[in-house]
Amino acid sequence: MNTPPPRLSLAEELLLLGLHPQRGSTRLMGSYVEYGVAGAVLAELALAGCVVEERGRVRVRNPIPPAGLDPVAVEALERLAAVPGKGRRDGVRTSHFVRRSRHTVMGRCLDRLVERGVLRRESKKVLGLFPVVRHPAAGEDFSPVLRHRLAVASASGFPDPHDRLLGALLYATGLVARHFPGREGRALRSQTRDFCRQEWTARAVRKAVQSDQAASNGGSGGG
Image (tube, rainbow, N blue to C red):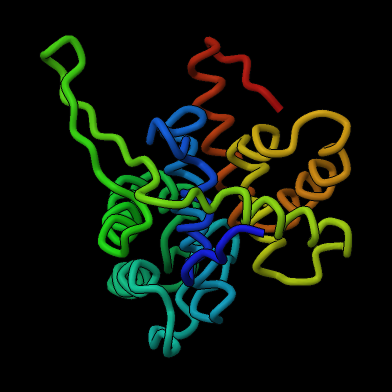
């Protein structure tokens, strides 16, 4: 197998699977990947016992992050803990967090991957006028390693909650079909579809993606 990737957060893993390693652009609509990265940060906070979902809202259960929690997730927890509110309206709507934090979270994850030498940043101008920033792999492409790990997890029924969440979020964004197409990927796609329905963070991402799809299709959203 290839060299094991450095320690990556759930959001960073999803982001690397969402970027084309040579071109540095997203494998599908950029906003879909951003939604997925924001949802992955929420999922990390939920796994750490810091947040819960109640009636469609993210509520902070424990504002003190555990040691070793990814810095981007820590920053998100601080923002959530600072939101005022009491009673039924305490917390932030899950859908609002995914939409409103996506640019900030995506940018921070990209910065950290560039700082650690996983990605590099390239700035270009299209037609000599419009600035475009790409993030190709700085060295080895770690997406095959991540795909292999998910394939192994699929064969054993996804025993690790981290892999289960990554699969659910890949399905929610639409990335799972890019990485696991055809007959060989059918079982994994079916598993991750079920996980997406079960995991509240993935459902929030899927809702945002479908809303964008419906808007671009003139109101006829995809399933």
